[in-house]
Amino acid sequence: MTYQETWDMNSVFPGGSDSPAFYEKVASIKNQLSAFDTLVQDWGPAEDAPTFQQLEEILKMREEITKGIGETRTFISGLSSADTTDTKARLNLNLVANLAKNFNNTLVVLQKKMSAISEEDFNKMLEQEPFKTSAFPLKEIRTQAQKLLSTPEEALINNLSIDGFQGWGDMYNELVATIQVPFEENGEVTDYSAGQAENKMNAEKDPQKRAEMLKVWENAWKEKADLFSNTLNHLAGFRLTDQKAHGIEDFMEPPLEYNRMEEKTLTAMWDTISANKGKMVEYLERKAQLLGMKQLSWLDVTAAVNVGDFEAKKYTFTEAADFIIDHFETFSPKMASLAQIAFDEQWIEAEDRPGKRPGGYCANLPESEQSRIFMTFSGSSDNVSTLAHELGHAFHSSVLRDLPTLNQSYAMNVAETASTFAELVVSDATIANADSEAEKIQLLDEKISRGVTMMMNIHARYLFEKAFYTERKEGVVSAERLSELMLAAQKEAYENALETYHPMFWAAKLHFFNTGVPFYNFPYTFGYFFSLGVYGQALESDASFEDEYIALLRDTANMSTEDLAAKHLKVDLTQSDFWQKAIDQVHADVEEFLTLTEKYL
Image 1 (cartoon, rainbow, N blue to C red):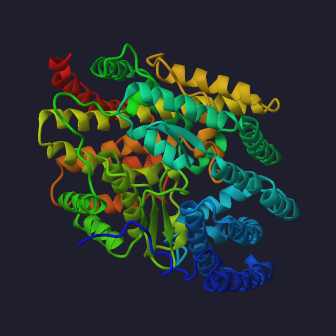
Image 2: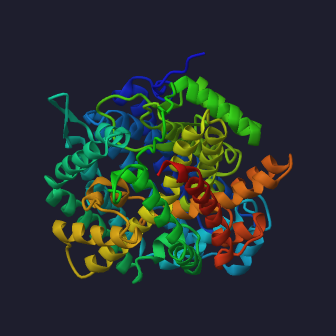
């Protein structure tokens, strides 16, 4: 069987970005929002106690609207990602943003009223269903209400965010759509979109050409540096002003709270990583030797290492699908089954063509009870791992679908657990199935380079963002200064192990412009090493692992990160022991790489 490389969006709303069914759904949600607002405004918590039947009805409607907005957002965001020239899709993103804004305004009223319930009545309420099942998120809602401003003030912030905060996020996407990267090939210059150019750079085998391409790439972003700088400054400025209005002085408080994570855990993770970078520097030095270089440049870190007479294996999309399904089966038949459905029902947009935005993601379709995966597949083993990664996200969503939507809202740090676990399964399978020592070295290198990304690249992003927000509190940060901060962060994170860096990375990386979550970086590293802990248990476990794994995933939205680890992994995340054990797995791969490559020097 041959699988299609384009996704099916017509089964969600037929007709593309101007779909009549999409507009009908938006109109339907507007009506629901009006009814929901009336229901919430009229609700009296004291009169509803002790059974809280009206609140039960309100929460049911909240769930329906949450699913409806999620369905429309995934649909229209997907069309915009797949074709950055689709202006109708970008306009319709604003329709969905307005739905979310109006919904959030009513949720503020609901949250305030829930916080007014007496402690005694609230605790009694949580002893009965359906509230008992959602006790953890309901307690969160009540706690977070303490930071809210008045209802009119919160509504004003939500309303202004559409043309302010969200507007600047949209501006970034508009700017990226205009990026043209002129690469010269065979004496001819071809302009590539940002997504295509990124793929070409990562696939280039010649170190000299990679260096030339990085300069062209840097210049393409530098040409619009002031526009990207304005966008980033306004996003951060809005966020900091909003935080200050809510009495939040530490800009790290919201991302830690969102990730249900203690600062002690974050500190323990980064401190342990920083103490263990020496082995990664040793790996980078060996890789430079194998590539015939004194030091690696930015793009060389993820470049393929080819020793001996060896050509990297190329996969068709169908071959990649079959490989993933087969190896998911060895750890979890349910995960394999979900992947099979995703390929059969065309959940995945993977075609390598112009006009797509860079990167990849997985998004939930809560009403269709499906997911949609976006990426650009060009046949590399790394693409196979990325595809497995996104399918891991889809599996995570699938095991939560029978739970109330309140119990499905897991944070980004634990969101990376299932995805990275799936990636590890496939990555190790490609290494185990290598046809030669040379291929094994190349695949091992590919796997270790992801560890470098988590320990060094992500660390650089985190260091940059902390430095940027610290300076942004004092005023606007210039484009030139942003590049200086990025360069300093990269040098610190990589311990000066590279010859050249990527100062314009602050503009080229979408995550810095994300309007949903501040500090869209450290959760990746957390998820990577947390999943290594889960993966380590899987390798040592018996046939019951699948059930244990699913139980962990189902708890990801229902307890703190530290409690989740204590319950399912029996570890303390605030101590270095867990992190060291996970890092030791990466170091073991490095040691094997160093041993295997010794003869090729």
